[in-house]
Image (cartoon, rainbow, N blue to C red; front, side, top):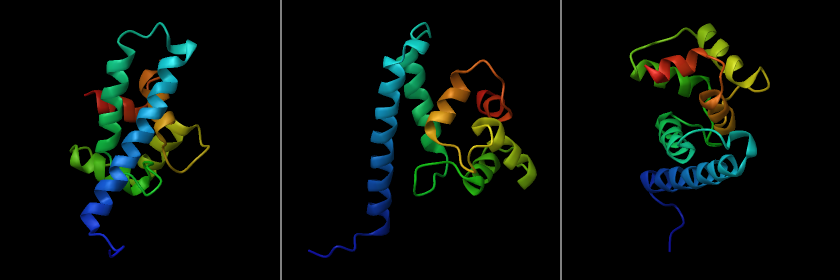
Length: 122
């Protein structure tokens, strides 16, 4: 059996792996005491997972600068590279050049208002 699967099939498999990884992270949040008072947490997390998966994720399943740029453009709110970098720093606290799912969930459930969060809510 040839090991070189079609690009689309490989992409579908990657997306599937990413989604199951996101499900695992969601479970951690559901078990986290810090979020026990959060209303409708399971539904919120499911929604966040789907929203996150809409981004053009890199191979590691994270939102990088170009993925963020493409997604902002698709949403009709194009941003400059500098604005995009600031958005990423705002979410990650400057610890990374990419936004991972944990950072994304923390941002969306958190009290702080990040530019990315505001764009996604409206």
